[in-house]
Structure formats: C-alpha cells, structure tokens
Length: 264
Image (cartoon, rainbow, N blue to C red; front, side, top):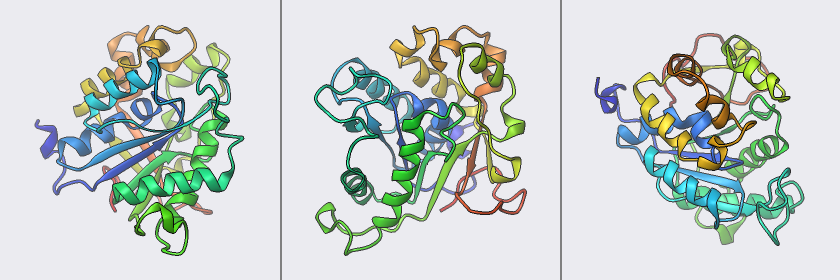
C-alpha cells in the first residue's frame, strides 16, 4: 500500500508542539509521517533544549526522516537536566506570557490546520515539561487567532483543531510494564477521551527510524527509545503501531467518533 493514498483526501497541514527532542517521534511519528506522505505541510516546535548540541542535531535527523522540516526550538531548559540549555531559564520558570508569545509566533508563521501536543496528564509519565507544554499550547493556539493579542507575533491565525496525543487505559498494553520497571509513572486516560485512533502500521519504518535518530536516548537505560531498542520487532511494533488522540474537553466526547484520521 502506498502510504500517500492511505486517506481518501489530502491530510491537513500539521504542527506538533512537544516538550523534548524525541517526543515528536515517540508520540506522533506515525501521524507526522502519514501527513507528510500525503503532501501536507508538517512541522514541529520543541519547547526545551538549546538549538545547539547533540540533541538538536538528533532532532534535525528525526524530523528529516518524518518530513517535518527543520527544528523549531524555543530553547528553554529541561526541568530535569541542568545542561539542556545553559544560561536559559527552565521552561517551568520562564514567564508564561513570554512562552505563549513565542509559540504564538510559531503558529502564525506556520499557519497549521491542526496542532498536536501532549495531553493534560503529561503523556503517560507525567513529566512536568509535558504538562506545561500542553498548557502553553492550548493558550497559544487560542491566542494566535486574536489580532489584539501579541500583535508583534504576526498576523492572526485560526487553527482548525487541536489534538492531544494520549494513551487510553486499554491502549497502554505492553508499554506500562516497561515504564514501571525503570521507575516511571504510567498515567493513562479513560477510553472515552481517546476520540481518534490512528493505525500507523504503514509508517512504522519511518517512525522507528526517527526514534532511532535520537541516538543519545537510544543508548540510555531509562529513556523510552533505549527501552524500545532492546525489544524484538514484533513487540515494538505492537507498542508503536497505534497512536491515540483526544480533543481537550471538560466532558467525555461521544464514543467512536473520528476513527482513523485527524480532521480540521
């Protein structure tokens, strides 16, 4: 099957907003590859780590595999790595208005139909950078549509939809034991909140190649790329072959809506 023909109509332009280099590949590598193969513009904003050094070079390689252009790094410090952005505040410590303004500029420059980001729980492990990136993305996507907010950040742009990458309780599968074994949390959402389930089997080669491009993480014992690299292909494909998304909402949406693809 030609991945470019996996959807009935061209997919919408897509901008990912993620906390760390490798989050984009692990959480949404399949959907990013799917949209790029279908001819959509795709890009990724990374809120932490300096745009120099090995992590940024690895990110550039991963985005090249996924067809998502050059890195767009805000350059804030990782909450758990003091060496991530020397001389810069941690994302958690940076003024909220400043972070929103910088992300609004990225949204207005890229003009995406769809934005994807972390879920409110912090995408399984509850990393504080994941949770804060989720908050900032929601605020920036809304603010980007208003001409009187952050006028210095460019012409207003209304994004069609925002989705959070998530894991429903029933979709954690074999990933849960792998994370708890190295002392990480496993925070999943009720199944009713996962409104879109995307089978990314056709793009698994690209997704896995993008994950492997984060070489420093593959070499580690606790990072998920390293954990996955020590699995057999069959087990790894089961974990990576499905991606789950939800539209942030205060109440559970109707079950079974929007299966199979993201829409604007």
